[in-house]
Image (cartoon, rainbow, N blue to C red; front, side, top):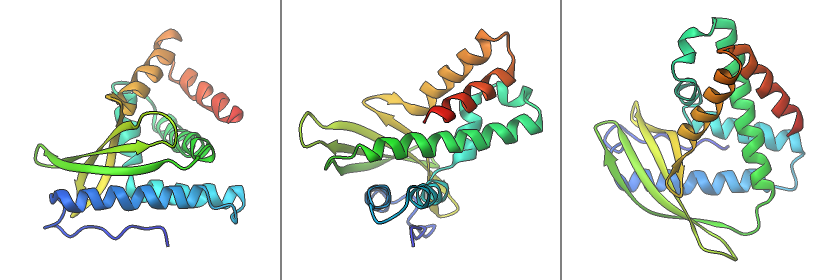
Length: 189
């Protein structure tokens, strides 16, 4: 079973529980993606389950679209969220396939307002300096959901927002241009 047990309401703003959540999630993600006994599609399916259980994928997707979310039709929104999830699964699965012994070391956690926690960590690499990663967690009914990952000070959500906005803007505000670009990108991954 991949699922992490949700934290109780009293634990959701406990820094120790937040660090444990990230440490366990990192271990499970690495174990899932690097499990050579699984066929590729089974690995992707398990990773997708892990992603959806622990990340607020629809919320991140809406944030990434920003103002364009409101201008998209319900059908476009639905297709976008499907493509967005698939993009995350395939991108990170590809990155994990290149795994070569990196370890996730969780440092500390701290409150970020009333409903968020920030968990600082480092990816220790066999060669090269460590990579600083901060996880932004949302208190979700007593448990945690990840809403952003900040790598070396760069928010992945904000970066994607800029990229997607650029595609839409460079195509005269045409939302379908983003969907087409996402489908094309997925066909190459």
